[in-house]
Length: 359
View 1 (cartoon, rainbow, N blue to C red):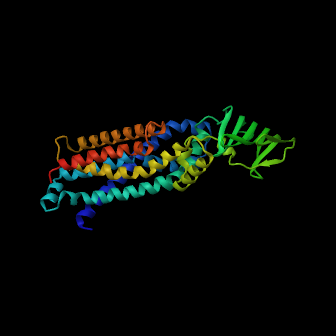
View 2: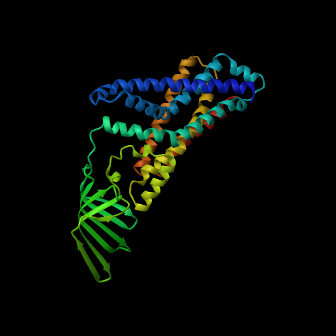
View 3: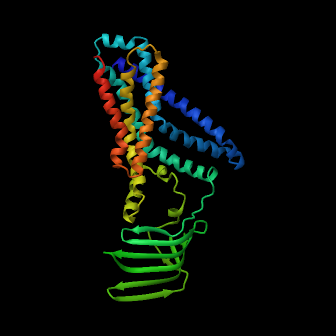
């Protein structure tokens, strides 16, 4: 690596880290001031508060990556331009694409780091963060849905009239096996209760009907120790808010496969989360490319104007991303196309800007 590459790469990465630390620190201070009353009211130990902000910091850092990487790029490039260093570099026989190389190397390093964080480190940190927020900031969760329908396998359907999440007990339980639009059997129970020692559901006052053509067999038991083991657990009735954020990529794959096996309807939520994690690292590369092009020439507004422009363009990207993700979640378009739309648009913009740059 040449001296020029090391010089630009060092400036770029150190500036990126500095911007991340500054913005994350500001967000953490604001968050602490907003939630300090909740900490006091709930008598949260200082150790837990420290652990919460330790897990909250990487989540925020990843969230603002489009802003931080763009601001770092604009700041470094505009400073080089204002000191006529870029003119000197190009006048010395270095081509414009060659000058871009250290910036792109830096953006690839950031992209790889971002992928590792979003795929494994942040989800593990979010396990504590989400649980902490649900415990201290949200109202006590109580599952209050009625007439609950869902699948435990592609052909097995479950119905509950209600479920008590505190007692881990369901009422008026029905499970049916339906194949080729015909019921093979139907199991009903007055109550079901989770048995943690045997990892299954205890049935109370249950009956089983089996159908074989016109023939029907019936069995009834009024005992409490009959164990039913199905692909359903008390966690399925828990607080699922932000649950997808707590899963690593391997855990996401396993959970999506489990939902597909059940024939569940909420699979897109987790598929979109997975798509976002594979898409977001490329944002660093695209925005770095655009940032260098926009900032490599002197402007009358100076560095301040270019940094403001950087904030503006980064916010446009974030708005596009939020709109695209919402569109994918509502099923308005193909999830893959919707999630990648901001990157596609900014890639085209970057290509057009690159063609306009004098080389």
